[in-house]
Length: 343
Image (cartoon, rainbow, N blue to C red; front, side, top):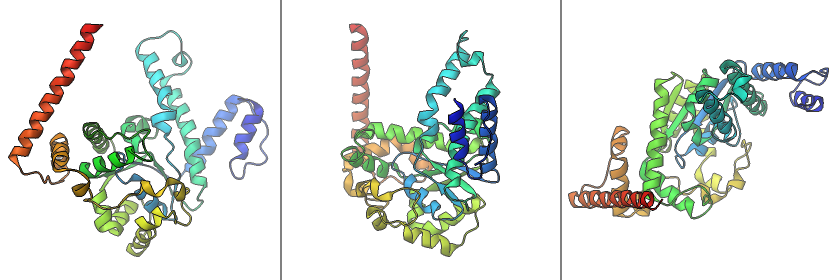
């Protein structure tokens, strides 16, 4: 990095107007010190969950507190740092004689990741000077939590969980409109993704005490109480009246209309399609009886663990779903064998 770039970075922080030019190594130290200084006495929180589980809504609810600074999802660990981390692990585990691991040790590489991500979090923190909490919301960070804790062992996590039937129904609608580039309309694919994300998210609680879990249903039925609990778990002073006001401000009609004053990002640009209905049981009319039975079959054990009650009580329907899944799996196996024989 050149001297001009270093100077530009230094000027991006408040109160750093008259700093003399420095060399790269000194600049890296300054970068770390300044980011850590901005983040000192602040809670770093990652809001995670399966797609279409209400992460954005919860982010906006929490952001109404003057103590919470946040921004649009950064995809920091699941996209921007993912390749770097994967290459580092590959070069180390395979004993490559070249690569970054020949220059840096594990501690130095971890410091590099902390410097980079710390700069991002410091910028978010500066967007709200009153904030004591820096909230990062990227749903897919639920699958990167181990690396996040490795770099930020003091981080907090909020994991939001939603009924898989609602998630499947929402993803199917999204796949046909605004989220066509990443969402799938396939029930089996979406069920597999929900199981993976929820399972990974719930594993966080065994690795840190800084874990809170909330259900979408709880936010719908007891929103102010749920918010008060979550904010209290982060050490943020609040009241039930405050939380009721946050819920009122972030009602679904306001969000669809793009009307939310002092939002951390432009809600209007998200489009009303991304907010949908805002209920807990629209899947009852959006999915057929067969589709509901299929979701319940595929996600059954985890659904039961989370106290999501199945509605399919028909033994005939269950038998048909079992038969359909068996036939489908057999077809997949046969297709893989044919492909291997053709090679």
